[in-house]
Length: 205
Image (cartoon, rainbow, N blue to C red; front, side):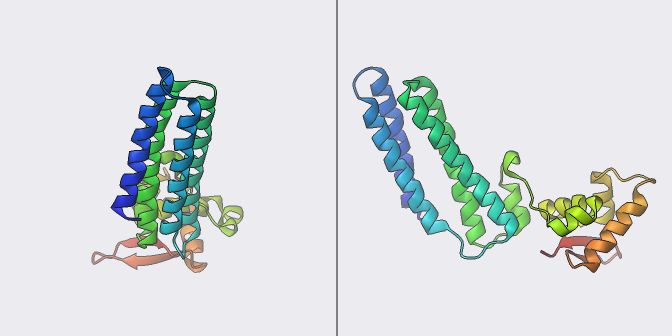
């Protein structure tokens, strides 16, 4: 999507805000605001069709779907506010939707450009950052699932960095080491060594 298309969306948002003010003052009908809202949703559909990636991994797909679901839910809530004449609340919702649209635009642009998964999670709000851990890991070894989850979010991490994040102690160290060995042997994680011989782990799937 071009910057021009994003400008069209922003113009529609401003038009919607102005129309809500007019409806509140009795200078326009709520149907006028709903018509602009319909046009705005159509523009979002155009944005999605232009930015939809051709190939996508599970983690990226989940991040994109949650972002789109978030926008759709906010549109539904906004429509209800307009229908039931909650115009002051509706204006706040419009601004919230604008922020969500901008996030979705950036997220889909990065995904389409093939940005690393770790970068995708850096620009994804916390409430959307659920990682789809493969079921084979979840059911076979909960510790391995935690490690894999952390690696997908970070992109890569050293063994001791992971141990610190997962609060590994003397009692859980052996389980932690076994989980890393399992992830490497099953191909979910790839080990790399730094010049000072420290192991760095990266998710392979």
